[in-house]
Length: 215
Image (cartoon, rainbow, N blue to C red; front, side):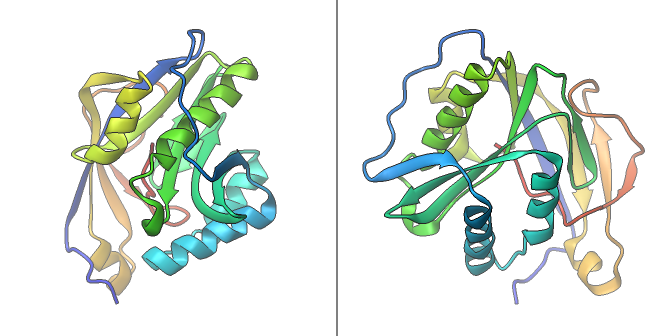
C-alpha cells in the first residue's frame, strides 16, 4: 500500500489562453490518434489509472459524463494511453469549485501512461482540446498547474498559455488521517479571489474522491 503523508501542501498556478487568437500549430506524435472519448474509452482510462496509480476514478468520471463534460483520449493502435478533460459550467475539484462563464472552458485532470511519457502526448491532447473549443465558439480556456510541476508547464508554454504572476490558493490536507480516521477535510487559503474559482469557507470537507490535479 502506498505510504500516505500526514500533511500535504498543494499550491496551484492559474494559466489562461485567449481562444479568439490563432493557436500555435502542434503535430500529433507519430502513431498517436486523438479524439473525444467514447464511454468505453473512458472506462479504459479508469482501468489505466487504477493499474498505474492505485486510484479509482470510476465514480468521478461517471459524474463528469453525466454533467456533460468531455474527455479526450490519445490512443496507440487502439489502446488508450492518455486522457484530458474539457469542462464547462460548474465543475468541482475536491473541495474547490470552478464556475465558468458560457464562453469559457476548463482543461483538467490530464494523465499519460507511464510507458508513453516523453512523447509530448499531453501537449498534443491539450492542443486538440483547445482546437475543439475554438471551433465550438469558446473564447477563453483556463487550467491550473501544481506549483513546481515542470513537465506539464513546458507544454503550456509551448502552446502560449499565459501564466498568472501569483498563486491562486494553497490547500493543506492530511491523506493519512483521511484514510485512517475518515477526517477528510482541506484547509483552503485563498491568496487571490475571483472567477473562475468560487469562494467558500476556509475548512472544507472533500466531496466525491479527492483533488485530482489539473492541466
